[in-house]
Length: 248
Ligand code: NAP
Image 1: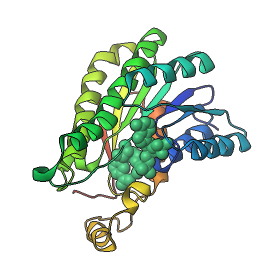
Image 2: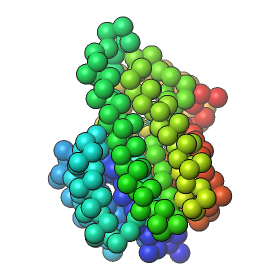
Image 3: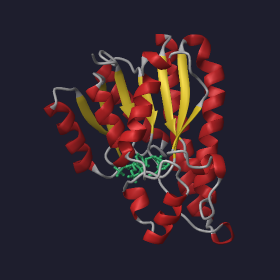
Image 4: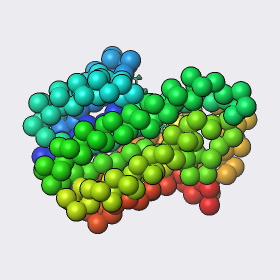
C-alpha cells in the first residue's frame, strides 16, 4: 500500500544525489513530484522519465533556489500544475570549502544564499499555500556539519545550522494549522558532493561511523518519506540525524 497516494510534492535539487533519491521514493509511495533542478536539465529529465516509466506522475521545473524571482516562478508553475502542495523538501545545496581565515566573502554568500536563503524562500511560499490548506509537510536537509561543525566548512556549517533554526521557528509558527516542519541531518552520504574527497579523508570519516558503512541517498530518502507520511504526524521541529551513528 502506497503511503503518499494523492499527495503532491516539490523536491529542490532533485536532478542528482539525495534529492533524486527522495523524488524517486516519494513517487514510489504514490506522490506526484515536481523535480526541481538548476543546471542539470538532462539529469532532471531522466528522473522524471524514471518516475513515469514506473507509472508515477512527475515533471521537471528549473529554478535557482537562491533567486527569489526564480523561486516565485517555480511555485507558480508547481501550484498551477498540482493545484496545491502537500510536501516540500528543501534539498538543494552546494559546498565551497576552505579554511575560515582564507574564506572569500563571495564564497560565504554563495553557499549561504543557496543552502539557507533558498530554503527560506521555498519554505515561505510553501507555507503560504499550506496555511490555506491547513495541512502540509516541510522537510529540509541540514547536515551533520550544521550540528557538530566541520573544519573547512564554516560557510556550509553556518548554512546548515541556520536550517535548524529556520525549521524550529517555522514549526512553532505553523503547527496550529496542521503543518509539520522537520529537518534531516545526513552524515556522510555517497554522492557527487562527497566524491571530491580524497580516499584518506573518506577512510577517516568511515572510522568515525559506528555502523561502518558510508550512507546512501536511499538512506536519506527513507527518512524523508517517513517524515512526509502519516506515521510522522505528531513530529515537528525535529532534526533527524541519519548518519550511521556518526557524531555519537
Ligand atoms: P549533489 O549530488 O551535489 O546534488 C546537489 C543538487 O542540488 C543537484 O540536484 C543540484 O542541481 C542542486 N542545486 C545546487 N544548487 C542549486 C540551486 N541554486 N538551485 C536549485 N538546485 C540547486 O549533492 P547531495 O550530496 O545530493 O546533497 C543534497 C543535499 O544534502 C544538500 O543540501 C547537501 O548539503 C545535503 N547533505 C549532503 C551530504 C552528503 O554527504 N552528500 C551530507 C549532509 C547533507 P543541478 O545539478 O541541477 O544544478
